[in-house]
Amino acid sequence: MVVFANPEKELLAALLSESKTIAVVGLSPKTDRDSHRVAIYLKERGYRVVPVYPLEDLILGERVYRDLNDIPFPVDIVNIFRRSEEALPVVMNSLSLRPKAVWLQLGIINEKAVEPCREAGVPLIMDKCIMVEHRRIFGE
Image (cartoon, rainbow, N blue to C red; front, side, top):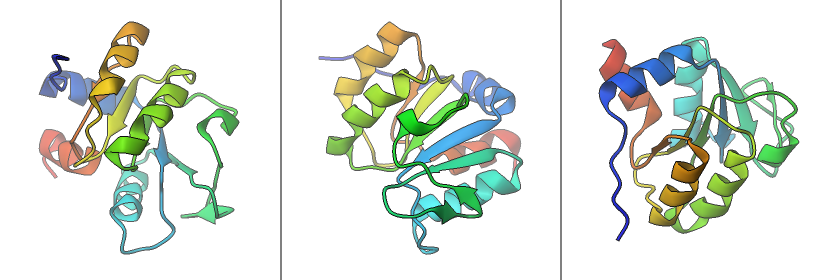
């Protein structure tokens, strides 16, 4: 059994304060999707949002990358909107970018992702919404 606990509020606050670029895997162009609303929220707070999605060329005015490995610049946080059972390959690709953290959105849990992140020294956040946590930490 894998023992997992999300990072404490202080670490999340530091992570969100120090990060500038967030790749959003599964960022939908559909305005009614959570990924779209979260990405808008992050952009409005000054983060550079990098869409990773297989079908579009532009989402929210940003160039879309088909795969994390196509991003030619550093990424601070990889925020993942994929089903729990589809998350592990995305997490593994994320680690090659050496991000400050890998973040699985609310409802996304994949215990097989814990050990690879731990071994890489990359904090993993699971089953939490980055927008909700940002609001909670920074009082919005």
